[in-house]
Amino acid sequence: MVALLIVIYHIYQKSVNENRVVISKHAVFSICIFVCVVLVVGSFGFIPVIQTALSPGGLSQAYSLDTINNNIGWSADLVSFFVPNYIFYNTAANGSISNLFYGSNDRTVYIGYVVIALSLYGIWKTKSKYKFWIAIFVLFWLLSLGPYLKVNNNVTSIPGIYLLYHAIPVINGIREPARFYLVALLAASLLASVGVKELLEKLSNTKKDTVYVYSVVSIICIIFIVESFGIPIPGNQNITLTPYAPHILRQLPKVVANQSFLVLPSPYIPTYIYGGVADYYTTVMQMPLVGGYISRTTYLNVLSEYDIPYVQDATYLATYDNRSFYTPPYSSPINENYSLISLNTLRDYNVSYIIIENNAYSYHNLALLDNFSQSLFGSPIYIGRNITIFSTYRSKYQNIKNNFISYYRPGHWAPYSIPNTNISGWTPINEFGLIITYAPLSIQKGNDSYLNTTMTFIATSFINQSIQVAVCACSVNSNVAHLNMPIYSGIHKYAVNMHLIKGNWNVVEFFDTYLSTNNTNMLILFNNITFNSST
View 1: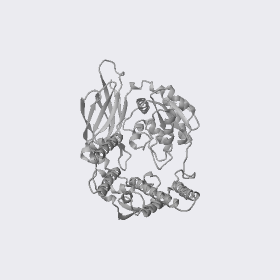
View 2: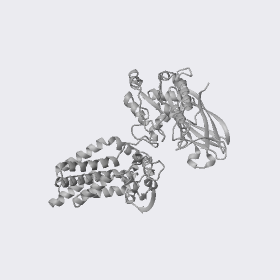
View 3: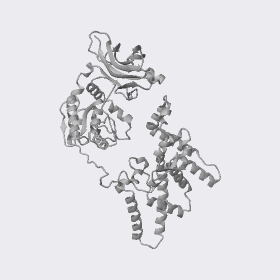
View 4: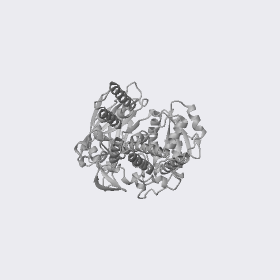
């Protein structure tokens, strides 16, 4: 958008100066080349956005957070333009000034007094010659303030021009106003460079010697470096890590090829400070890291890790004593062997090594995790002061697929507790509750490709009703078997026979009537869903 404004401005300026419309074929060709390069280079970013927008419910999902309240939360505070980052001054994290920055890099918008002074000086000396860049700065600075002005964390009733931007469809997808500050900063930097140029010309025209000129420039540079200092000063509020990579990390990739590794605990917790260390291990080992923490980590990134019960339990042990972010242990509507699920998923992810950050755990919880890990992988291949390393070689070559292995699909089930009772369970959400189960190949003899399977579960219902269950081996064929089951009032155990395809993943879907009627009396809670071979 900024580039387009610059092009339009220069065409306008030249047209005014020459009193005619000025745009050559060469200029048009250059613009087309620029657009093509932008489309190619940026395709990895905007193609997924377009796919999401075109998918069912994609636009509503994309704009779900684009509300005025969220815009206010991610707006720049007026004071934050004039107050340096709190880390430099080692201000308490709960201080009134530090709250302008704490926990949000997007809202750290300090410009610097040197930049402001040089910009004003340049504007004054050039008699507002750079009106275009002044306008760019003012426009995007006002946009960064958000829909309503905030002063020292107090939201005022003074509206901002961001309200106009928020009302424009499509382009209002940038829901974090403070990010507009980056464009304002570019304009301020250019104006400051004009100020430096004018200052140097003035100093060079005086009778002062060269030492004086260099002294003035040095003082300006020193002040700028001090007020923009980005390295935290050691103190109680800062955490610094010294990554240590034992020699074994450099040797592990030589043992296996085309494999990945996993670092515990999972990084998706505010108190977790080892994400950068995990990235460092990636550089040292030259192996892919499951989860990938190099870019901004979202919950969707970590779902790939949380498919592994072992990872959820390990992360729970690391955060159990931290009540500010409570991660429950792995739970599911399915009653299955979670160790088998973990081993199978680790094999699917080609995980060869698991690195445990010892300092992330208390002594007691680290012992629990160590015992749990040894039960899955055997003895660790390395025990150090900072890390413990397990090899998954033993587990990857176990014939774990001689058993039923089942997962519930996140986003299709939700835990639910009946108020004022000790009754709880899982209820399907988002149209149906989806379960993916692997039917083992070698349990039943014979050449039949189908495995006679009994699915059992415990259901709690307020009334007598029925539920439809659909079964499909979608990776093999599109045949869907529909089973209609009566569900009785109270808590009862149920069993249903079905045919699953051997050696393949099968999909089982629970269609709950409550989802379509929104009638609380028709709610059904499921527990202990289990798959076994029928005799």
